[in-house]
Amino acid sequence: MKIPVVDFGVYSLKEDDVTDEQLDAVGEEMKSAFIDVGFVYLKNTGISQEEVDRVMDISKKFFLQPEDLKEPFRRGDFTHSYNHGWASLENERLNPLRPSDLKESYNMVAVHCDMKWPSAGAAAGFQEIQTSFFLRCKDLSLRVLRVMALSLGLDPEVFLSAHSFIGHEVNGTTLRALYYPPVDWDKMKEGQLRCGEHSDYGSITMLFQGTNEGLQVHSRSGEYISAPCIPGAVLINIADLMQRWTSDQFVSAVHKVLMPPAGDTSPRQCVAFFVQPDDDALISCCDGSNKYPPVTAGTYLKMRLDNAYKLT
Image 1 (cartoon, rainbow, N blue to C red):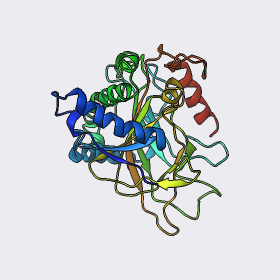
Image 2: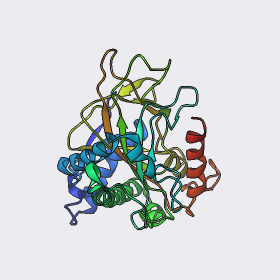
Image 3: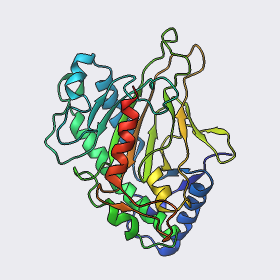
């Protein structure tokens, strides 16, 4: 089994004139992928590879700085958002049965808050580049959510109205720059991965990968399949709240990031946009069933994040 690739050109960020028939066609392809795998590649989204390279370049410059220059931006030190900022190496553990993940990250949660940002030296322009990319991802995510709702025969507002405040303090949507540093094989812990097995928390996740691979997705057949890097494409997956929302019509698949092959020390880099409903949005089964109890998005997100960080 492979993760399907769908052409999103008819509804890319460059296109505003799209017919119902075109939306139905692309929606059916995405729906099939989300039901069967939980993941899909979208190509021709309107977000260029140059934009992706730009945000990865400034992110890498930040990560390669000495820790004392990153420390002032540590996650948990911002009063406006508990999830904004830098998380150091082995600061997160997504699979509680494994050692902490061999990665570091920088989380951007809100574009409208007066927060302290990296700005000196190698990180000059960091805020502007991250903010611009966040807003591009926001625009694309809303288009994806619209198509997803239509594919299920729902009014698009069922999803869109619950994502009204992306980029504000009352919504947990996060642009996350991720850096997996070169592997020191002598210091690795037994069973350690770059990112342990987990499912994502919110509505959908949009992932832009660099050139080094390692991401694997747990298929419905019980096997892990590779999610290769496809230049110019964004990898989109269903997250847990969306699976609850759709009463398991869409699947939130478990995934992980492996170490490189033995002896290979290559780093890995990616940028993820974790789309969350507004904090006060009540997520209940859209088919009217009680398969999952209603839960507010903010409460659910904080519970999952606390679990991931308290174990390290």
